[in-house]
Structure formats: C-alpha cells, structure tokens
Image 1: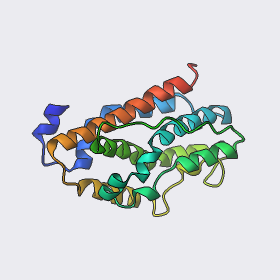
Image 2 (image 1 turned 60 degrees about the vertical axis):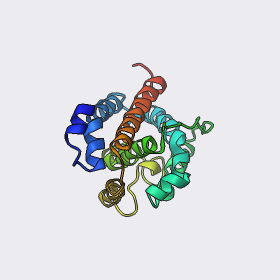
Image 3 (image 1 turned 30 degrees about the vertical axis):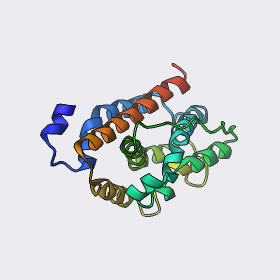
Amino acid sequence: MNAIVQSIPELPLSKRLKSGTTRDHDTVDNLVMSSRPFESHERYAYFLNLQHRFHGAINWLYADEELNRLLPGLQELPRFDAVCADLTDLGLPVPAEPQPIRPASTYAAVGWLYCAEGSNLGAAFLFKQTQKIGLDSEKGARHLAPHPDGRAMHWRQFVALLDGLELSDTQRDEAIQGAVDAFDFYRSTLREIFPAN
C-alpha cells in the first residue's frame, strides 16, 4: 500500500484514503450484507448494536477542538444520538456508551472520520432496506437518514475539507492507517455482535 501511495503523491487526500482502503471497504460491505441485517427486526437489532458500538466509540472525535479546527462543522455531524434513538424506537435497551477509541494521532482520527462519514454516503441503500421492515427516518432508521443537504452534497463538502488539509506524507499515511483501523474495528465488532448463522 505504501508503495502505491508514495508513487502518486499528487492525489488529493480523499483519493488516497479511498485507494488505501478499497479492499477494507469492500470486505466490510460484503460482511454487512451477508449478515442479513434487514431480514427482520431481530437481525436489525444486531445491526443497531453494531452501529451503537462504532458511533459511540468515535463520538468524542466530533467534539474534539483540534479536529473541528481542521474540519469546520464537524461537531454538527455525529450520529450516535440518532442510533440511541433508533434503539429506543424499537423498544431495545440502549447499552452503556462504549469505550472511546484512541487513534494514534490527530491525523489517524481524520481517517476514522473519513470511514464514518463515508458510510453515510453508502447508507442510501441501507436506508431503503429498512423501509422493507417498516422503519424510516422517524422510527428506527434515523441514523441512516440522509443529511439535510442531501448525501451527495454533504459528502462533497466533507471531501473538500479533507482535500484542503495541508498534510505531510507521514500525516497522510497516518490518516490512511486510521481509516484502515476504523474498518478493522467495524469488521471485528460485527463478527462479535452478530450470531454466526
């Protein structure tokens, strides 16, 4: 991965993050769908607990002063409260807030946020699937609902902030590793929460 990244230093950060995590993204995407989270409310409950663990672990990043300096408006984007509301909508217990993750650096945290915000773009398909089990933006699928500005517009704005960061090669590599770590965390948590069958 490093050889590829170093050979194309002209790529903006968002493109480097994408190229550095394509395999991770695809394996997580396939794993989520093979877990059949939208087959029933019971299986969707596992998915909500997965989302609670992930978004709860990164929730503090959205309030971090340095990250908000780098990515203005970040504090308006967390979805953890919406996940908790979705659990409540379905009459499910809301677990205690998860242990926060501790990225190795501020730039690694940027990678975690890339993973989290990118998942909102991809959530359009997931959101449609929830409607098949009677859920929507008002009940049970709040955290998957599109941003008020629209998914595409929100993502373009976030990408513009990422690509506007002036980072060294080392800092860019830290961001890529952070994104990889985020996908690893999500993948391992999914395997822990969902039943094997």
